[in-house]
Image (cartoon, rainbow, N blue to C red; front, side, top):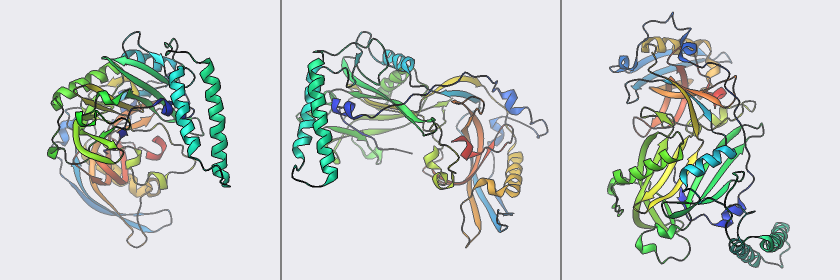
Length: 470
């Protein structure tokens, strides 16, 4: 699940090139999504208990036959080790999608930045000097084109660049000399000060054709990355990059003046200040610095921390997001829209000089927590899975071939899975869920590739339709 992110100082040219953003609201909650509602049909199940009942659970070994939608027999083969979260209890957590609107932008910006230091940083509010730099970059682009070409695409680019240069000339005439203090929060780009350093903050949101917000978030970039880079890069006049190191961290000589624990305290403070529900720090890596994109200097100064939405130290994201489910793209029907991404994670780059970069994607806001719920016995869950897969084989969209007619499962794990509130768009509940699947994993917590899954609500035994939820 590690994702390599490379950053540099976000230039005002980047701000100018950002495309249109979209906004979506959440409807008011009108249903009671409590544990009583979830468990009211479980009275005929045997012996509901807590998480401790699974402590000594043995692997599930089984094999049976089902019939697919074309009448062909398919063998289901289970040799699945049981994986449990490192926790004493589980809950039902109701959340809602964060809406990237004026109120959200104001709340986050004012929480992160020092009072009185927030300015507009979008193209329509930039001062003359910044616009002149943008125009200079646009002019360099224009000068690089071959004006003698007959290529229609190049000619179109030339015409577009000419129009941009004219637009810059007009805008520079009307622009102010200084940055303009933010009085409302109806744009997506801001400049602000935090702990004596200036940062740019950008909000973004992407909608589907159906008007469903699929991906959104906030990023924060140090305005002058040279204030944070190692000494050997101080004299680099232009491009300086840093990225999360993806190798074996134990072999890295990190020259950061802070210990990892001390650096994490800075990151924790930012998470608290931002007021977003990324409560579980799942792992960290060294921060690698580069002079030119892709030219690693073997220079490590700082740390990258990854925070997930979660509860009681259990990540909602760690077991996998939609991209980790291998069948997702080829098995999802066109009539099933892609919904709000499950990848609710905040990434923070930090060294002894402070926060360098933050990316907070798909934030969720906690609405309620129903604590310490009771769970069905593992025997009950296994019986439900076997019965449901046998009687409704086609609904699970397994991947297998006509050569072997075999579906295998190697892991059965208790995770949190997000179930949407069908009555209230934008609201979800993270529910304790048993997932049986053929899973390739890095370690006991991380499932990087998941195939042929079965999802069972661990409280009431109902089947969760993956494709209806994501």
